Image (tube, rainbow, N blue to C red; front, side, top):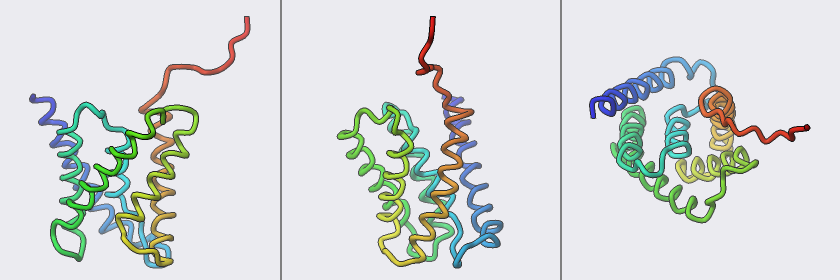
Amino acid sequence: MIGKTISFIIFSLVCFLLTIIQTVFLPFFNIWGVAPNLLFILFFFVIFFSNKKDFTATFFMILMIGFFSDIISQSHFGIFIGTYVILYFLHLFINNFLQDRQGKNVVVYFIGEFCVLFLLCHFTLNPSVLVHLLYSLLFALTAFYVCQTFIFTNHDNNQLKLL
């Protein structure tokens, strides 16, 4: 119980740190007036790599990410919390049909679902949203490969072994 509380506190601090980076640091590195959405990338990583059996922890993390996204947004409070919860349930619905996503094409599944959920989150298809998608996808894929290499290393070596 104490370990889970500490992990939620650390996760809240990570959300706060990403919010600070997104609002203070990344606007200086924008392309066509758009910076990557680090909180959406964190949201996607939480739902993509979460333990499906630990629904309450994942749901709490989604609410925390939505809270920080609502704080920095210019729209009504609660829009991102609701949007992220709906996108999480859509992700669970998609996962019911794609049970075997741990094969060789995980990165294709990652890119496809990231793009669909990102476009659904931003509700519109104008050129700046597509640039925003590509810029965020660049950061997400970099983080994906770092996580695959260092954090979620698979010890099953599928290489052909000779005698």
